[in-house]
Amino acid sequence: MKRNLLKAILLTAVIFTLNSCSSDASEVSTVEAKAQVVVNYTYTASELETMKLINDYRVSVGLSALEPINFISVKSEGHDNYMISNNVVNHDGFVDRSENIIKTLGAKTVGENIAYNYNTPQAAINAWLNSPGHKENIVGNFTHFGISIRENPVTGKKYYTNIFAKI
Image (cartoon, rainbow, N blue to C red; front, side, top):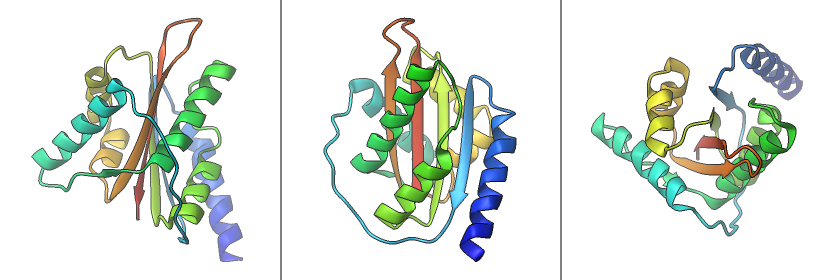
């Protein structure tokens, strides 16, 4: 019963948050945890740079660096591909992504930042740091993260999905 209530509250929060999304957005989800899995993911230079920039910022404000998890990056990539295929910029499916990460990796909390049409990792990071909700995820009580940056082959525009987790 509590889990169904929490799902309903999360869904409502996501729906209200989606109405405020612009060129970039953030989400957070909290639920109970379970197990762990290992998958392969090949990071691009831009993805590695983005993770380094996030960790450099966290360390500069006295926080610990986050550890990458390939499984989370695969989930991020799936969302980038969804946004490109549907020509949208949103958090559709965030509840499912976060619940999957919680169930699969044993995460306690999951957050998500997305961005669109930033040419460099530094530009996306600057935008996130200038937005209170996105910055909250970057400096949040998380231990791990994953990232995907994909380019729409038709428009050349870049899509960023950065998922954070406390494990």
